[in-house]
Length: 283
Image 1 (cartoon, rainbow, N blue to C red):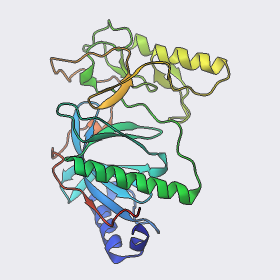
Image 2 (cartoon, rainbow, N blue to C red; image 1 turned 120 degrees about the horizontal axis):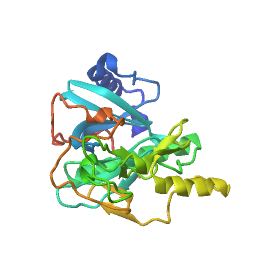
Image 3 (cartoon, one colour; image 1 turned 90 degrees about the vertical axis):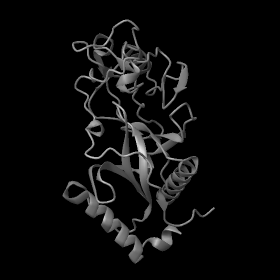
C-alpha cells in the first residue's frame, strides 16, 4: 500500500502540509520516493517531565516536533532515520500506559500513546517500515543504541555513590552509556562512544571502568550486560540505585546538559489527538 502512495497527489499534499507546519525552521521533507505513513500526538518522556509532541512517520524516517498550534504550527524539528530505530514495548505501570522505547544510536527515549490500540498501530507501522527499508537497502539493524536517560525528577541522590544529594551547587549529570543520573565526582571521566559521537562523552565511574577494561583487553564496546537491568515505569536503566524525588523539585537541572525537548511549550497538549495511518500494513 505504501508503494501505491509514492506518486499520489494525496501523499504529496500531506507532505507539503507537514513542511508548511514546520515553516522555515524545518528541513525539506518532500523528497522522491518518500511517503507519509502516519501521524499523531504522542507523549514523550523528556528530561524534566512528560510532554506532548507531534510525530510523523514516513517510509524512511521518523519526524517529531514541539506543538506550537495544533495541526497548524510546529517547531524544533527532529529527524530520525528509520534504519537506526529499534522499538521496545513497555509494560503499563500506574499513570504510565501504552508506552514503548524508541532507541537510536544518538538518542533513546520513551513515548506513550493515548490508547492500547494506537500503541499497537504505531509499533506495527514503524516496525514494518523499518523492515521494508532494511530489506531494500540490504543493511543490517544497528547493533548498539544510546541509553535512555533517567529523568531528573527520578533521582535526588546520585545513582552511583548513593550518597551525594543534588542541590543548587551539586548539579545532576547523565552517564551517556547507561543513562543514570550521577553527581560530578561520579561522572568526571569521559570515554569515546563512536556510535553516539566523535568526541569522548561523560560516563559514570562504573561504566568508565568496564569500558576501559574492555578496551585494554581488545574487546568490543561492551553493553554492560553483567549488570542487572530493571524496567521502571517509563524506561530501562541499570539497577545501580534508584531514588524518587518525593518533593517534586525540578529546579536542580542537569548541569550543561540542556535538552531542547525540555523547552517550555507554547501550547501544552495531552496526547488526545487520534493517530492517522494512511494505508493498511501488507502481511
